[in-house]
Length: 396
Image (cartoon, rainbow, N blue to C red; front, side, top):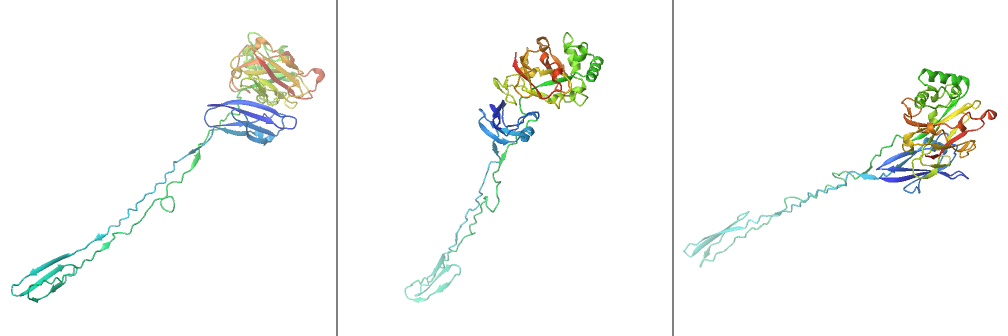
């Protein structure tokens, strides 16, 4: 198990902003690194990895490539299979077995006739067996005419045959091959895996009538929309009312002035200890969410909206007293709407359950309401002429 750092560097001229993320890697794994589709960053981008984030993995990636995502695989190495075993079977037992059949069996038959004539018949039984008979008329003088036919037959029984099972030409054992062990690709996107979501509630009469009717019919007790109620939700029924509120179908977008699915109005919550920067290069501390951009195409720029911030409790370490906010017009990191603004502290401490099937993931959330994000932009500034940026500043 190792702690790895992934850095994405925007190398555009005059930019050089860096987004840092640390991940814990156990065994071979692959990660998809991408930038949000709402990002203004043009690039090109470099991606670095390693325990200190200094090893270049990708360079010169385009904006399109980074939005689609690039894949980084860590802790992968080839696993040799199978173990090479070249087994030479040397069956060349050279059977040089000379059969030396020397049948030298001279059997002399020495027949002595005691007349002075002695005919020694020395018959050497050889192949062939010559019979050499000599008659001597005197003192027996044996004439050994047995020419022994000693014919050694040195006949090898077989010509030596060297049969070697080798890796060349004959029976060949498997050639060693190195197969890289497949590594699973996580289906989740690049960490962090938790996001905060922005809910823009339209304040025109038609939207408020539709939202209010839904809330009243489905059991909301004290809140039917900001314009209808004259304030944001609060009180003893706060958790129940927002549980109904989040289930309204308008939050998926495409319904009147509920234009955008709120799931796309999200900012990653930093999990790493310490400080870094978000996808726009703005400062970001642990357990705060990065800049969320709301463009003039994602809301109706001719009407006002009331914005609330929904934060999954599990994404901020399981506890939250409150979180200060920054917001501004036109550019990320600008805080001309609010700079370190403090949301309603009573509501920030109340759990709100989001069931499955809603526009945002199910779970326990804390919802932040702050007066600076109510009725934006001001009537005098309609229509909205630029994007609104909202980010977390400090968690308590």
